[in-house]
Image (cartoon, rainbow, N blue to C red; front, side):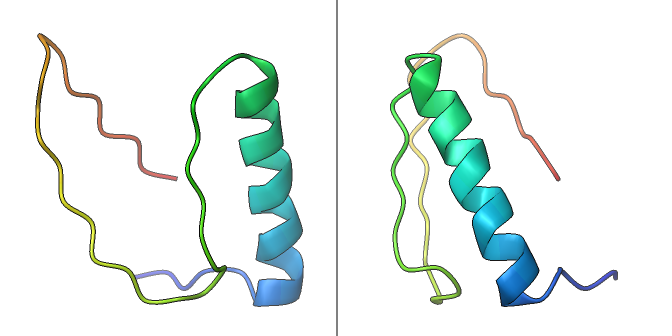
Length: 53
């Protein structure tokens, strides 16, 4: 498994990415960078896309 970039590098990249998505009209939720999160998903549509970065 490859580790992620250190926070000083990764956080500005995430901020730029979420800003770009919002500029395109996407609804984007964000939280505290680096915090542990538990995420759940409810599929409600014909397609689910998994994006791995």
